[in-house]
Length: 384
Image 1 (cartoon, one colour):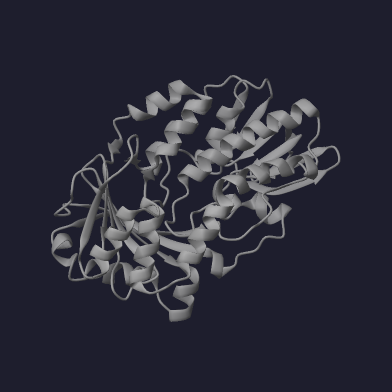
Image 2: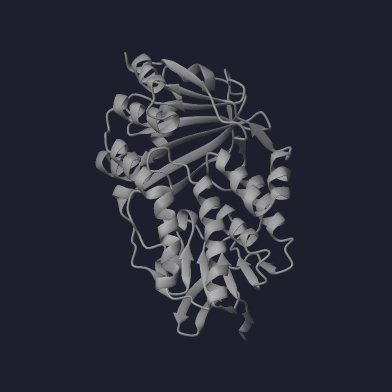
C-alpha cells in the first residue's frame, strides 16, 4: 500500500489532557500542528476521575473560555470535602479547595480535545497509532499504522504510560520500584455516599495503597484501588483480588450490599514521578504519564498532564522562534518540570516507602493537608 506524507511544524502524539492542552497552548503560535490519537473519542479511560483545582487555573492561562465551559459542563460533580478513613474505621472530613470536581475521563478528555480542535492551525487524526518515530538533523518522521508518514520539526509525546515516543527515543525502562497499578469500576446503588466528597479508605492488609470512592454526576461512584507494583510483586498479590477483598472489609461490606457494578473492573499502570528520567531530547518532549509525572503518594496525574502539556506547547513555540530544536534547547523544559515537581515528589516518595498502615495514612494526610498543626491533630485522631 502506498504511503502518504504530511508535513507540519509540530506533531503531538496522544489526545488525552496533556495532548489537548499542548495543542491549546499552540493555538495562537502560527505553527502548523498535527495531533495523532490512536483511538476514537469518547473513549473509556481508567482513572479516579478527580479533576484538581490547578486544571482550571492553567486552562484559564491558555483559553479562559475553555476553562469556563469546563466548569459549566453537566457531566461534572463538584467536590467540597475530603474524607480519610483509617484502618480502624475512624474518619476525618476536611473542606476541600473550590473549583475541584469529578468528571468521567470519557467526557473530560473528549471535551478538551473537541475544544482544542477548534483551532484553525490544528489538524486532528483519530484512530491513528504511531508505529515508529525517527529523528535526524532535518526533523522528525512518524510512521503510523494506517500507512501515513508525518514529518515535523518536533514531536511531543503525550501518549501515556506506554508511550511509543518514550520507548523509541529514550533508554527509560519500567522499574517496579517506581510504578503503581490501579483498578477501577463504576457502581450504582452504593449506600452511604456522602455528597460532594472524595473518600480515601485505608484497609488492614492492603498496604501500601488505598481504596477510593468518588461520586460522579450520574449518581454512580468511581471505586478504585491503587497499589505499588513492588508490593504486589513482593507479596505475590493480585490487585483485582485485593479490590474485592476491600469491598468485603467490615467498614465497607454493608455499603456495597446492594451495589451493582456498571461495566467491568479495569486496570491501568501508573508511572510514578519518583525517579528522574529524561523528558526531552533532540527534537522531542514528553508530557503527562509519558514523562512519569504521577504523584508517588496520592497516585494522581491529571493536573501534571495539563501543566506539562501547556509548558511543552509554549516551549515548542519558543524553539520554533529560535529555530533551535536541539537537546540543549529542550532541556529548559526539563528544568521547568523539575522546579514544579521533583522536590515535592522526592518527599512523597520517601513517605511512600514507609509501608505500615498508620504511617502510610500519615504520609497521605500531610500530602493532602500540609505539615500544619491541624494535620498533626488529624493524624492523632485517626491512629489513636
